[in-house]
Length: 629
Image (cartoon, rainbow, N blue to C red; front, top):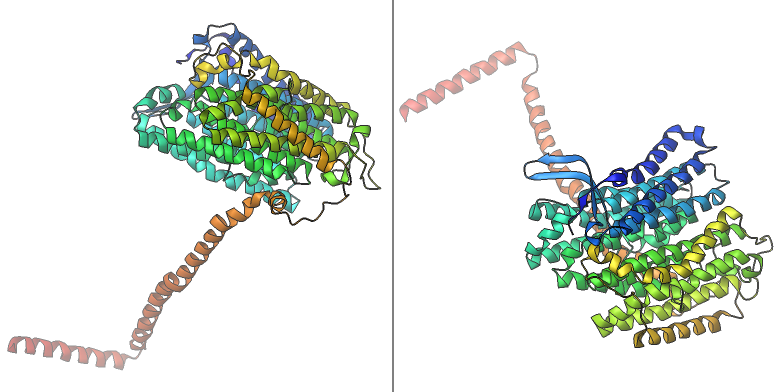
């Protein structure tokens, strides 16, 4: 769909990015002078962006479908030869949903963080990084071309490094920030090469122009381009095989975890694949690869969550799994892409709810994250419990909750793709119900297992009010969006307009409910009583794999780090043994020759005279012998 020129308020849509970006820069430049009020200004910034985004969304709602993609040109960036790369924004059905998600959830996380980070001496710097994160993600989703998208892409990567490693005085946090940054560079190579390929093949990186020209690609180039974009998505969205950084990202403050998992970083890969739907429409191989990666990841993430003791890491595994569902849907074609975005939006609400809920649990238990140290928290933290329960119902797909409307259609679409995809997606839903029930029982129900010096208590209003708002959305958002989202997203995803809702009752849906019920029952029966206050030892290989994050670090060490270290040692040995030998050997030859020649320069006039005589005799002999010959 060709974007229409911006008019009215759309010409000021760049303010959505500029406001949090300017505030972030202001707080960083002013430093300690803004400690007293910096966090408040930073909290207002995403709210301003949300209000602007909401007004634009309402404007788009009132327009005809053909005029809902609006181009906002800003300035020419590179204009040389056949390349005319411009900085511009694209406000359409897809980007505006991301804007509302990022700014609304981001605003609630800012409010929550006011109390959560109240005693941190660097709170102002933390809020500056949060604003920079929001601005970077908005740049990513509002860009009208891949080059400016890449600017936002790198921005969220930088912010993840700054925020995951925010408490850098802790070695684990510093290492986690480095790990996230370095592993994402691998994925970023894919996006970089994709941009170079587009410039070579199309002469442009503009979304609309690339989509229009994608049909002219050969199958080979389309497949290669699809795989490059998939590599980029795997890095940002923590999909197999680039998922290992996400577990360690829990070392950052909990508001960061909520922002990364719900509204910013890990959703970027799904956005990239959906935005590139025109390319994947011409390569069945790359589309299949997206679906395969999503399926493997949804099972891997569920596996990780099923036996881990750390509440935040269980939720991190669930994020991997839910993003896997979105990637699976995105690999199913244009209609699946709309389902992926539907689940992404609902997931943003209920996952932010649960991550902030885990932060509330930590706040009330002296920053403990071990679920074996909890139990019976529902009695002393009722608001946290009931709001978390809403997120729990949403993620397992309980009838009427948001996940019921957004995830179940993905499972049904997976069956239509092939029974293997459908069966594995169904198994993932059952495991999700199990490990989330396990989390609820170990944390909030059963007998108390708190330490003697821990006195659990409810969090303050600045933390619980965002939880209540997100809990409500976790329940109602799926139903509210079900009737219109497929039709709304159809032009932006290349799908045919859908008149009905995403969810409808089917045999697969009923089977899915049975599987979820079995998962809930199993989670309750195995964890409701005789729970120890320390994680029990086990030899179960499945549990050990879960506790070790399915050995993602081990695989990376064997396949990447060990060969890299061996290569480094080999290069070092070559450098010292061969290259240094050649350099030092040649220097030795020159030194030896100069030492011999130095003996001739002894300062004796008689020696110089005798040398001249010998030289004259030698020259004479050469001349005589030359004539005789």
